[in-house]
Figure 1 (cartoon, helix red, strand yellow):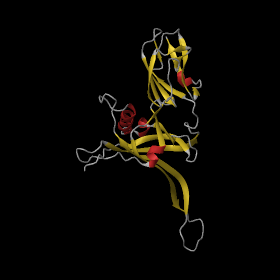
Figure 2 (spheres, helix red, strand yellow; figure 1 turned 180 degrees about the horizontal axis):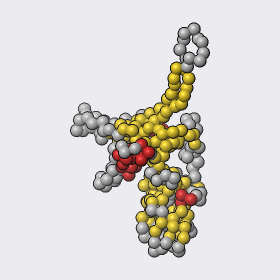
Figure 3 (cartoon, one colour; figure 1 turned 90 degrees about the horizontal axis):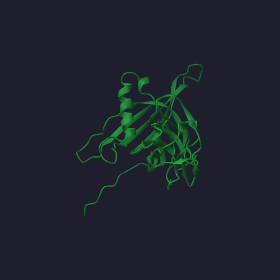
Figure 4 (cartoon, one colour; figure 1 turned 30 degrees about the vertical axis):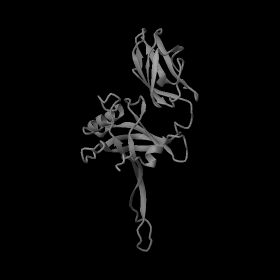
Length: 254
């Protein structure tokens, strides 16, 4: 009897959340990288021969630095309508093309951490570029898998796990402003959005969003309400609490 094949995802891919900063530096707008089938987090020491010591001819090495990279098997995805690439996948592809004219042109921020908030594995963040974006190929029935390599540029820093708290956080808006009459769609990016329900869960200042859809734990699409001129704090409320006010949640009416 024929069986339906199951999607095989490694334990590390299931446990690790990888976020990509899609904003232009120094602004920051992290979005989750979806469709990860395998994840390898590689840190390697750079060494050279050390002849400073006499060890009866036995070799010694000195550490002169380190490098880091993420190797990811990525299931290439489209939007729900199937008409366009997943926006984060499309961003990575564009950064790969940009890096061909100079690595600095394709740099972006990346961070990874345990999606359940555990602190056993370090949460880390750094600047990187897409070093490889090749399709795996295979037979016509094979999944459209990309062997993505995100190569670190410069130091890798340990950060507080963004998933450690149940309180939602707003880390970016697109667009970050609009007309006084409202009515336009606003992408709200952040974390811990699952559980946002009811008319008062998404607000622009003191005014409820006209409507909203929780796309994922890190993405809400909302319709901006009418408001007076100036910056309004966009907040998201879930059973975990209310997102704290930061400069990233400012929506400016003009």
